[in-house]
Amino acid sequence: MKIKQLSIFLENKKGRMRNALEVLAEAGFNIRALSIADTSDFGILRLIVPEPDAAKKVLEENNFVVKVGYVIAVEMSDQPGGLSSILGMLDDSDINLDYLYAFVDEKEERAIVLLHPEDIDAGLEALEKGGATIIPSEDVYNW
Amino acid sequence: MIWNEKIECASREEIEELQLERLQDVVKRAYENVPYYRKRFDEEGVKPKDIKTLDDIKKLPLTTKDDLRAAYPFGMFAVPHREIVEVHTSSGTTGKPTVSGYTREDIQIWSEVMARGLTMFGLTEDDIIQNTHGYGLFTGGFGVHYGAQNIGATVIPISTGQTRRQIEIMKDFGTTVLIFTPSYGLYLAEVAEEEGLTKEDLKLKSIGFGAEMWTEEMRQEIQNRFNAPAYNIYGLTEIIGPGVALECSEQDGLHVMEDHFYPEIIDSQTLEVLPEGEKGELVLTTLTRQGMPIIRFRTKDVTCLRNGTCACGRTHVKMDRITGRTDDMLKIRGVAVFPSQIEKALLKMDGIEPHYQIIVTRPHHLDELEVQVETSPKLFSDEVKELVGIKKKIENYIQNEIGLRVDVTLVEPKTLPRSEGKAVRVIDKRELS
Image (cartoon, rainbow over the protein chains, first blue to last red):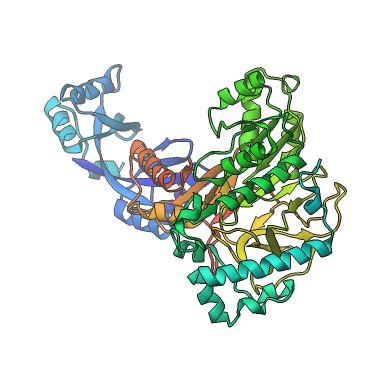
C-alpha cells in the first residue's frame, strides 16, 4: 500500500520552511511525518498529512509549488539491524532507493520507515515478498 | 608625442571647415551609392545640397542598428565589391550581425586613427605591443594591429586566451604596451601573481583598454597591478572599430578623431541634439569612409562631449568614458547580452514561468551572471538530482544562446518582483557609473 506524500519546493533562504508550515497550521493540518532534502540553492520539504489533496490545494493557493507522490510505510523491528533487513529486501531485488525517512509511532510503540524506491510498485512487491509489515495509509494518517 | 600634429592640434575653424567639406562629400556619396540612404533622404525631403553648414546635419535621418541589420550582408556598401578588401561584423548576438566593409583607403584611415591613439599611450617604433584583443571578425584585434604597425612597433598578435602563455611572453619578450579589456586585464593580473611575476619583472610603459564599461576604481586597480598608466579606447564595428576616440596622457576623456568621425549627443527620447557638455546618446557620422559611409548612427552609448584645447595640446573634442546604454544591452565580460536572448533560451524549456530576473555582479573583478527563474509545478520534481538536472539544462540553454556561463537559481513562485508596465529584468550590481 502506497501512502500519499506532499513535496514542496523551497528556496534555501531564511524563513521559507516556516512559511509553508504556517500555511498548513492555519488551515488545521496536523503533520504526521516530515523530512527535508536540501542543496545550497533549494530544498524539498516532504510531508505526510491526513488529507494530502486538500493540503496541496491550500499550499498552492499560497503560491507554493507542490507535488503529490507516493512512499511506502514499513514497520521496523526496534532493535539493531531492523532497518538493514528491510533495505536488504530491496537490495536483493535490485531496487534502488531514492530516499527514506524514519520516525517513531508512540501509540503503537513501533518504529516506522517511509521509503521511496525508484520504482515504487516493484519496491512494494519486493517488501511484501520479503515479509515486511507494510502499514496502510489510514493507519499513518491517524497516528 | 603627437602622431599627426597638423590635424590633431588644428584650430576649431580649420577642423570645422574640413568637417563641413567632408560631410557634404559623404552625404553626396551615400545618397548616390547607397539605395537605403537615397530612400531615407527622399522620405525626409532632404537632398545633399541642403547641407550648407555643419548644423544642417540635423536635417539628416538617424541610422539605427536595425537599419544596418536589414541591409545584411552588403546592402550598405557604397562601392563595387572588388574595392572592398576586408569585412568585419558585430557579434550578432541579437540576430543577424551588422557587416562592416572596408576599402584599402578605409584600412588606411583605421590605421591612421589607431596610430594617433597608440601614440597618445606613448607607443613608438621601439615598443613591443602585446595585443590580447581577438583577431577575427571582431574589430578589436585588427584595429590595434594596423595602428601599431603603422607606427612601426613590434606587434605580438596573441589574441585573448592562453593566459599563462600571455604571462610567459610578457616576461620573455619584454612587452612594453599591453592591450586588453578591463576584466581580462584583471584576470591576467591575477594569473601573473600566481605565476610569481612581480610588478618589477614587467617592463610595461602603458596599457590600452576598452570594449567594456569600467569605473575609475577599476582603472586604478589595473594601473596598480601592472605598474603602468591605462588609457581608454573607444570604437564600434559599425563606424570602423577601435579608433573612433582614444585617451591622451591627461586621462581625462577620449579625443574623438573629429576629422574622420563627426560626433553629436542627442536626447534618446526626443532625438533633439543636445548642447555641448550635456549627457546623452552618442551619434556618429563617418566623414571619410569609402566602403560603407554611415550617417548619424545611434550608438546607444551614453556620454557627453567637451570642447577646448587639452593640456596635451590636442584640440579634438573629448568624450567622457561610457557610463551607460540607452537600450537594455548588457556588456558582460566584454560580450553584448540582451535580456531577450535569455528569455529566448528560457522559452525552450517546457514548463518555465515567464518570470525571471537577471542579476549581474562583479565579485572578483570578473562579471558574474545569475538568472533567477520561478519554479512551476511542471518544472518541479520531488527528486533533488532531477531538479539539479533541470537547473543545469536551463544553464546550458542560456549558455548556448549568449556564449557565457551563467548560474541559474530556481526560486519560489511569485517571489520575483512584479511591476506595472515594463518588467525589471535586470539588476546590475556592478556599480559602473
